[in-house]
Length: 401
Image (cartoon, rainbow, N blue to C red; front, side, top):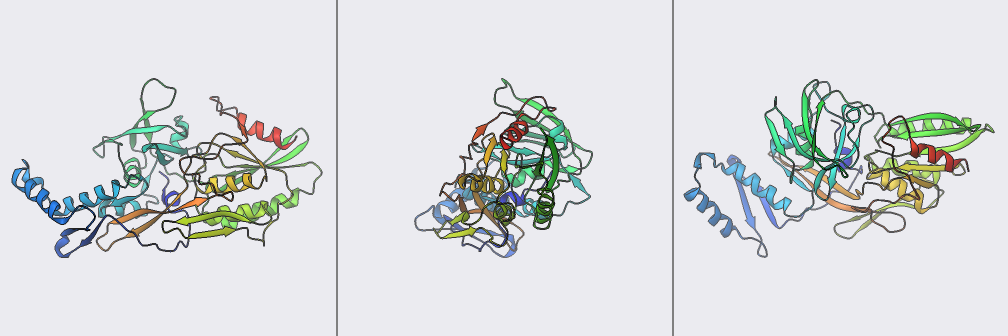
């Protein structure tokens, strides 16, 4: 399964922000965890009373472990904030999140997020087991079952990193997902065989339509490689745009789960002459502004249409939103996912980790797209027939008007 670090920590070079919680925690010697209450929160005395009651009354006392209970208390504290993207990870879970899985583990090709706090598919990866099995953006994942790993886990309240860890595994092994899709009367199971998932960052395909040559740019994710790949794509377009048959650009952001914030600014800077692309507002109220890189601007006069759908999230929404705000091109397709917050990961000395929402994004017009998404200018639903691409057809039609 593709890693979600790029979804959760979308901006390089973010300033480290202080994390303020209702209850602070420290890890002492011997792996003993102490919970320290603040004067305005649940005090330590109540915590001690609960612990004493458990020690005296709990039936299975052999299962009581101070370390595990301490981690559980911290997880509960963080979960009480009500933000599914802010999570505390005990050492084993945090290690699983950070480990390099190249060549040893595989996945099914799903980018994950939440819909109304329920685990949901942000987008399936092109040509992955998930896409081949018909999994779509917006499908809900209610249960994860893996007999080989002895996993039978309901996803209610599950952290994103835990879900990733449960779904990924050795290449060739199977995982079963209990799914729900809006419009279907019942839940259903999908059995997926894990594979090595390789996701390209960007591809360009030229399509001749009505005598016009259209550049169809498929932008799959905002990866680090995009900083070198995008300028090459731009140069290819500039070389071919001198042809009288050149029709313009379809920028396809469908099922793009996001990535590096700066990569979205880089691409926007070739289409927008000047101005703000996105603002990042921190929990303390400070605002960091990302403006057009005026050294770019190589595609300012090219006709442009942008394709989006429910799998277009975070950095792809920033790019689409900025282009829409500046009236640079029409948005065609379906409403975007609505992921407009930034998560900052921090690792602790015992191996545990905290991912905390530290900021939100604001589009040039001041709007925050979190849980709202961006509505396209022209709405076109996707076809159930995978051989037909009604959205792309409409985008090219609009481009060549």
